[in-house]
Picture 1 (tube, rainbow, N blue to C red):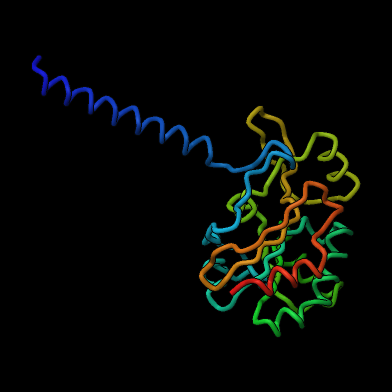
Picture 2 (cartoon, one colour; picture 1 turned 180 degrees about the vertical axis):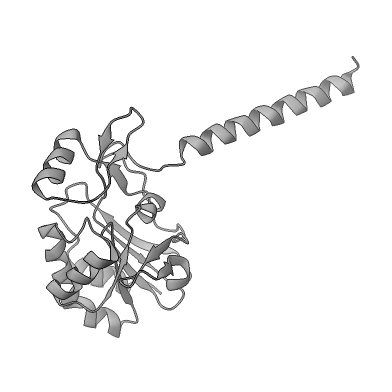
Amino acid sequence: MNFFSLKRNVTRLFLTLTGLLFLVSTQANATNIAPSEDQLTPLLNGHQIPATMLKDIDGKPVNLAKLIQKKPTVFFFYRGGWCPFCNSQMGQLKAIEPKLIDMGFQLVGISPDTPEKLKASMNDNEISYTLLSDANLQAAQDFGIAFYTSEKVTQRYMSKLNLDNPLWTTPTGDKRLVLPIPAIYIADKKGLIQFQYLNPNFRVRAAPELIITAASLVK
């Protein structure tokens, strides 16, 4: 075997191994759910809002990438209408919505709730801003903020709160409830993230004043 044949064979082997490694990596990350709320790998400033397809309160599809083209957006992820801390946050956001609108923003809430439950939340909280259903948690995964709850939390939430959220199978074969960590994302009309706030402690949410200040810095 001459030098050129050897080089060609080595190159083919390298490309084959590279392809296999890429395939393994892609399959390993096919489901982007963190083992716990303190092991997330979320989207950060400068990242692009993903073109995730969600549903509005009428069950109609909504593309986040297209939605963002209308005007700069404040996205907030919450756990569901069953969460008292989330309902409190929704009320706080309702209070600052007129200010955000004056600044040219739209306010969009995203949760695992079904469209029917989103309608109930809108009525209960008397809100008019957009709510979108992420029932399959695709947006939460695309933003890198989905996580498996512990066995204890899964059992407590599923029994005491009577949730109808489906359980997910962990890499080790356990059944767990998957939730998004509460988060705030602010993006410009180009879909670039300019601000984000995440806290593993679901009881702590971004202060309304912080959201207004962050939004005022978005060009």
